Image: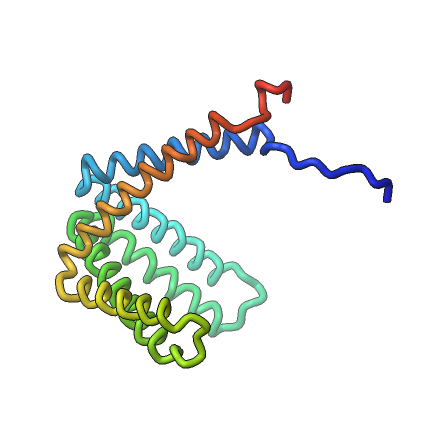
Amino acid sequence: MTGTPVTVSAPPRGARLAILAVGLAAVGFGIAILVWPTKAAVALTGVIAVYAILAGIVYVALGVFAKNLGAGGRIGHVLLGLLYVVAGVYAFFSLQQSAAFLALFLTIMVGLMWVIEGFTALLTLGRSGSKAVDAVFAIVSVIAGFTLLSGPLWGAIFLWWFLGAALAVLGALNVVRAITGKGGARDGE
């Protein structure tokens, strides 16, 4: 050990450029969700459908060409791949309905998770270090979950708008962080 002091420097220029790019993309997606919520949902569903088709093709190829899989593994990979392809093709050719189904499905899942998380927090309250905070968390979580479950359509709309606003705001903050960060090209990097 030399005893040289350790200095913390700003992120390198490449990291700042990555933060800037991600921030700009988030702002763009956030604005798209806020301005064209239905079109953005359909576009996202299209991306998911294409991913499902590609993943299905990969699974089928693994099932057919993999040498280290037994018969059960091969059959399982091919069947899973075919299921992915069928789901992706169906979603791709009925994007509006698939987007609506995906939104409702995710909203119901989030609602159920919040309810279960709230009840879990209540059931473990006896072992909590901060019973008041955990009790408030549990109650808010259960109420929020039941609210989503009682009106999944409105819940889906709220969650989608919230996602758009969060992406726009957090993306803008990342852009500001990237631009105002110290180091980088201004300091000779």
